[in-house]
Amino acid sequence: MTILRKVLVNKQVSCKSVWFMRQAGRYLPEFRKIRSSNTNFINLCLNSNLSSEITMQPIHRYDLDAAIIFSDILMVPYALGQNVEFIKDEGPKLDKFSLEKFLDNNEKDFTDKLSPVYEAISKTRSKLNKDKTLISFIGAPWTLLIYMLSLNKDKSSNQGQVEKKDITLILQILNNYLSLHIKNQIDAGADIVQIFDSWSGLLEKQHLNKFCYEPNYKLVNFCREKKIPVICFPKGINENYKNFNNIVKPDGINIDPMLEPNWCKKNLKNVVIQGGLDPKILLKSEKEITDAATKYIETFRDIPYIFNLGHGLLPETDPDNVEKLIKHYRNFK
Ligand code: CP3
Image (cartoon, rainbow, N blue to C red):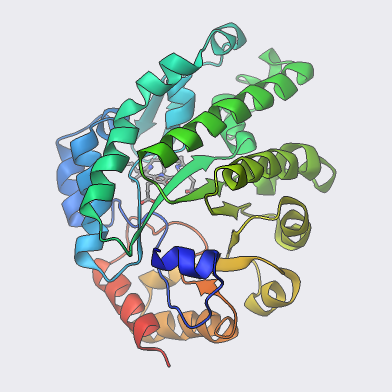
């Protein structure tokens, strides 16, 4: 059994476990080297040899318990026919959403288009030690919708063209393809799933049920049927984390830096807590880093906990600070 599963499934308290969101990425010179000659990010994700190599980069460098497959949550809209571009310093840019085109998809084409991602998972699984976890992931339907309709940018751009009644249909169809993407990733060798709902914090409380809890619940149940542990990350929903956890019931929940670790310990029950530490702290001095980390490690020392961050590693992070943080966690008694 992999170390993360010992914590997530067997709830082992004595078992230390650590990995970082965005551990494969721009803060690593070895990633930037590959990226500089692969200017199209989607094509890089679809190059199974390179994406497997990038997935392994942080594993070669650090004492981590899990690799997360190098891909992106936006590979799903891409596979559903929406062109995705990554413009430097601007973030992702998607083609205008077309409902007609969206409804014209089928499962076979979807799986075919993403087959390099699945190949990268099998390749990586064969390179990884047996005790290390290979994490696969998806974006939650609401978060994907935000990008697909460009709701994070110009409010007038796409929003007006999609009617309210269609939103329900789009979310439902997304849920089906996301389940298929989870299944394909498990079949290829992934042994944990993480669901990123990065934009759930935009939802007003009265909309959380329909747009956040319900879709996450369906996907968590799908993972449970497939007997694969699942970690949810409903970023930015503050005290609603408690409701989320009670309704969705994932195996693990990633907390964000807005939440107090002690509040989490008291209010998030029957779940394994992961992460929390603000990635910005890694831009500071060693003392500030280890002090901030100690707060999380001490608070969660007597319950099962996966050490991680409250958001992805920032591109400007010094890789040596990541090393120091891992050493601090490993040596903590
Ligand atoms: O190491 C890992 O964590 C695995 C790979 C991974 C990437 N994206 C690679 C990536 C994962 C798990 C993601 C998830 C992801 N992608 C999320 C959810 C987590 C979060 O950050 O909230 C979201 C919202 C996206 C969408 C996305 N992809 C954005 C907004 C951007 C541009 C800005 C940014 O944060 O980098 C990306 C691009 C992206 N995805 C890069 C990487 C390494 C940078 C690409 C580059 O080199 O320019």
